[in-house]
Image (cartoon, rainbow, N blue to C red; front, top):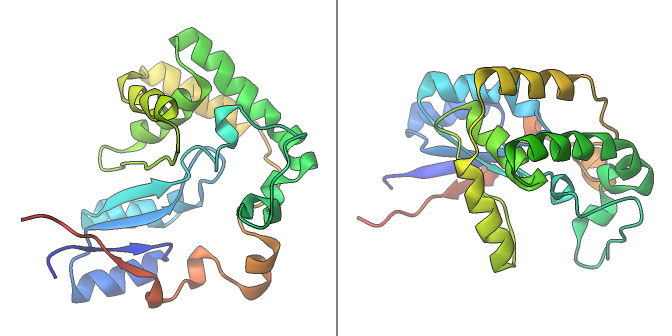
Length: 198
């Protein structure tokens, strides 16, 4: 095995795994709505020279601006129906973040999604987000986020404005929270191989 990665693991697990076999990349949720990796995981990755592949960089679609407190989710196939972040109350309260990104996007001639993705890309050069979509138009929109560049002042202003927002609702489902499935306790069974073509 030449390259492999881990998903949703703690900094401690990353160090243990990397000591046995060099880790290529870590996949975890990361966005303007969920920044927990900044505390321990990202500093560890930078120290060890490991890449970071954030999933749900658009906050599971919320940061696109297409969802609101009236949006309904079918729990039979959409796990957002069980996430505290996607209750009507939380989505209504968190609209202030979407409004902020929209206002910032108007200044940069970019969409809300593009600003959210550009923010992720601006954090570190070794971060490569993987936004999911089933629509070609959204894919093209997301790809253009790579063309959005922030000045140091713009990034500072955005971070300062976001820091003043108190987001409502957690990232974990009610069931997952009860069973303790979180980043700090994820087992090694979350290892995932990253296939490469030689």
